[in-house]
Length: 202
Image 1 (tube, helix red, strand yellow):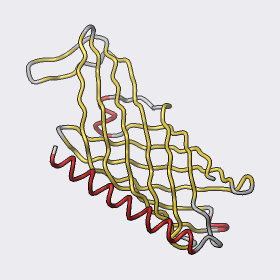
Image 2 (cartoon, helix red, strand yellow):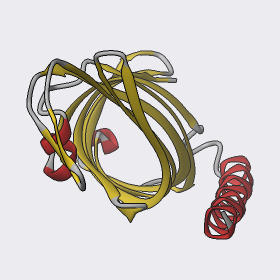
Image 3 (spheres, rainbow, N blue to C red):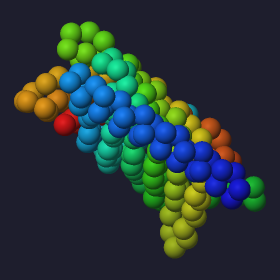
Image 4 (spheres, rainbow, N blue to C red):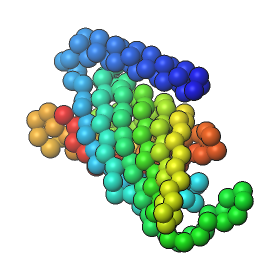
């Protein structure tokens, strides 16, 4: 609990600093680039331990991100995502006192809360690379018959990203990005997955 509280306080402090710097920079450089609000639909592909538990593509994901420009080719921001993994399977689960068998519903809800930085390049600064870091909240559940087993945990992780954006209307850009999430082990679990982002930036 103390570790989780420290992680949350640290992340809130970083995000507050990012937003303060971003807002002051955006005011000073409004003639260069306005802040961006980005809403994305996300398709997620599990990796590693996540794939061992649920080896199915997730089509249930959404994200919101704010980016404030520190200079014309560099932004700092905050990203909030929600990805849901689900699968029905009869794959056995080994536990300390035996093995669980039978039809199961397996669910993972992943909530990254990330401070981000992005660098832009190319014509109209349409290509970008970025990195996010911060806490991940993970809710894991599996139902076997009448029984339900669940676990929740907080992790620290990072998420590199590449992407492209293109202006489709005044003050509106279409966004396509690919991001890798890696949340380090905590309470015996860790989280790894890729995300394909399709969205709109205003």
